[in-house]
Length: 469
Image 1 (cartoon, rainbow, N blue to C red):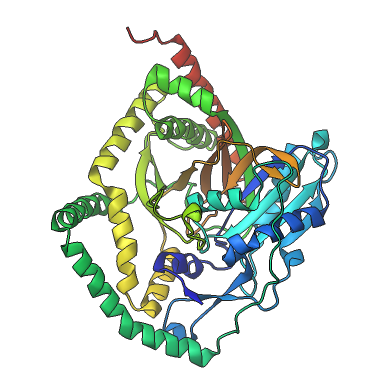
Image 2 (image 1 turned 180 degrees about the vertical axis):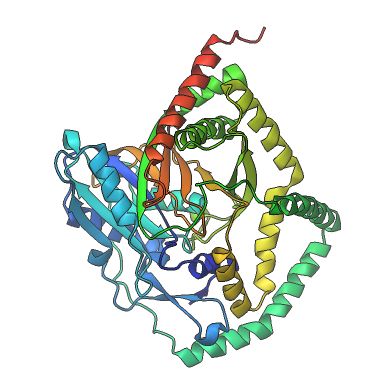
């Protein structure tokens, strides 16, 4: 049994009948489409590397402790690897409609929290793999690592011989309570031991504390609500989904000509998309669109799949940025975003956010659960959207011997946020996946078209800019 971290547990606590907290991806492969059994065999060979795929969530009675992961005694891979097909003609619109429908379905908490859908019937003989994984299992970065584990790095890899799965015995409710009470006794000692460890490096501890305090001051300034907008409001259980395309070469060309980082360029293109969306809705753009930007605090090379960390739990914090939709000039938008993000990095806002989520581990689990649920239900006017950028593998992946051509991400919606944007890079491509509430954001394609147009404008400016010197 493994107990969830406070952050992992929070993604369960905020879920309700309209906020479904699974992340996902849509990967398109060259043909011919494989049988469902071929994908099932591929995934089954990787299950020993991903224990969570065969575990379910167990809640402690009376919420005396955080939920735990326990082995599923009835695990059946055929339940999780599914097959479907597109209606003719099998184009982009049919695929996007199917993805919206699949992502609108809540994962069954009584079973391991993931699904894979083999989608046949795409144009040109292609097929797709639609993946869903609950956010309590993975954040964006570890989710990318998970993708590289489940898929293959070569067309015909050797399949290891795996031992039959023997699940651990299911704990009784009495044992769940007893283990929780014992852990409460042990936990203060573990926390004090961590404190003593910090005092061994007082300069580092003081520096981290100062950075966290500085970042907290930046977070406090976010309490002021943004102007009312159709970007916020009640949401329903159904989703729309669309995509936009770019490439790493295009972004690098913009950086070379106009400056900034990959994130700066990506957010500038997204800003152009939101500007077009608001204009098409007849809303004022004399404002900023405040976005939550998840930031990984996972330490590469210290913990991760390659280092034996097979838990894939969440290691994520956040920055809050204002997308300057009121700026019409593409170059000025990019410069404004670059200056803002440089300031946010200096403010250590992400570190403060990570510190706050870590401190939630000190709260009684019952209060943590109630507090998280309450926050999700409070009207949220201080955040308009979420934009998450996840670097993916820059090498070719395969499934059942077929090459993965491109991939698009899916980000969930929660609270009163009606539109979310995810960015995923793979093998030289940078693709955007836009999630919208079905009833209140039927025009997410306008946002996607605006992203591509915004990127094209920046590229044109970069090409026209004389080289330095």
